[in-house]
Length: 110
Length: 323
Image (cartoon, each protein chain N blue to C red):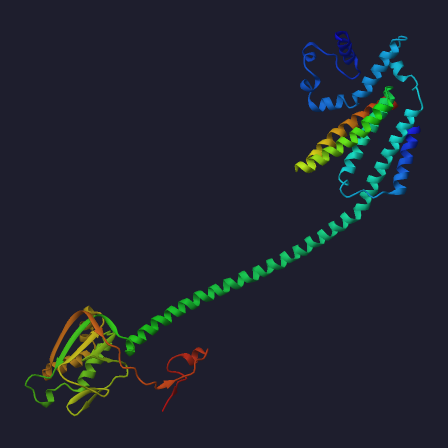
């Protein structure tokens, strides 16, 4: 509940402040969001599995965001462009889907 | 240490979602034997959660034996980490909000650029259509011009041939070619009436023209369609140049048919009867290569304006003759 509240507060804060993202960081934002989404769903599933741990959640969240951004940056520097971020999106997407499936199993017992 | 490793292996084997390690698989790590996508799906949950949970279970099991599940679902210990989790969620919310705001802020720009691109594409497409139309027009006009060119070329060739013919006939250019060499002289030991007169030579030349001669010269004087023979006293003149017998007539034409044609024509008959009756010296020999000079250029006698009217430009019509 507190986490959901935090999410709400964060969204409201982001919408109210609307900080300007530096142009250099702009390409990394969407993939960072996807990585964060993966960490959040992982945390939710762990919580429902009963093995949730704050420290693990925080570490996985920030490491996911940083690594995703770093991969995109690396792809840009290597000249492979969007392909590398596509790979990241695919892997993260699969993880998110299977995590959500596990969550659904917990919530609806189906 | 070896004991701990064994326990670690047992824990891994008991992890939920993992298949029991069989003999073959146990030898190799997961990432070697499992397909990549399978592995991603199986390990969708961060292993850290399980590792930490297992560690906790182990430390708790030291005090009182509890099932793994109950140990994990036991209420968390302190309030502080929960707040940390909430703060991280807040950060996540900020991230999401920023990304969404950024995307929606960029949307008008992208739409505008797309609209302008579509506009440009449309404009270019119109230009291409216009250019293609123009190309079509130019192509058809090229075809027309080419046809006209073919016509003009044929006309030019015809005119060139006609000019050539006229040049030869009018003595405008020197002519070389095969033909016959004719020698005519007064009758030997004849009286005055047996001399070759202008009318006699004129008959011969007319006969030669009719027989198909292309160019004729008499004593090196080129004959044209305007040349006249005149008697001035006993001497024959061509124009104003007197001729001295014997008269050497060079004719360019077909040497095989010229003599025969001369015999068949009216003027030829007339000429032969003159030769017979008056006893002229007359000799005709074929020649392989004759060279006839050009006639003296004549003064311009008549001009007519160049018009596009084919009726007027035809020779002999619409002529303005100088006095």
